[in-house]
Amino acid sequence: LGRFLYELMDASKLFQLSGQISSDIPRIFQAGELVRHAQYSYRAVVVDWDTECQASQDWLKSHPGQDLKAEPWYKLLVDDDQRITYVPQSNLVPESTHHETTPLKHPLVQYFFETCPERGYIRNGRLWPH
Image (cartoon, rainbow, N blue to C red; front, side, top):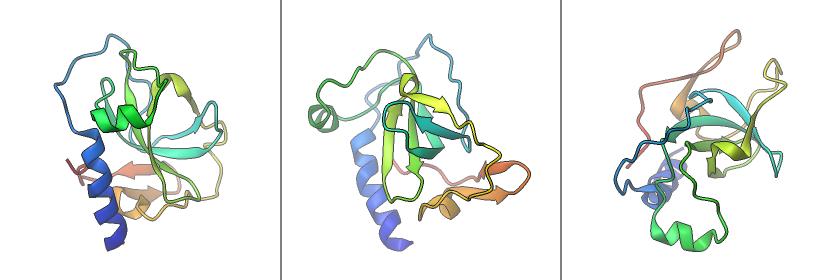
């Protein structure tokens, strides 16, 4: 777990706040909610969110063509993978199999969440590293 936390803190440098600007688009996903990427179909859990894209210039340069319209962006732990993704709300859909009994497999799930069979993933008090 220590190695993943180190990598998370290193990755978090990509999402440093550049001034909080409020989006007029309401946030529709909550921390702990399972979602699916609309284009790539991977399943993930929401860890944190920003009112609009807060990625660094380096991240933006490495993701050409990314639509940066003012909308909520979500930090996700990808199921059955070690990736952490940063995705605009317009690219996410609710996980239709939320009642699915297969637990999400990511090394940081236990760091950020308490799991409850009846309610899914409950976000604990650990903050996203900045």
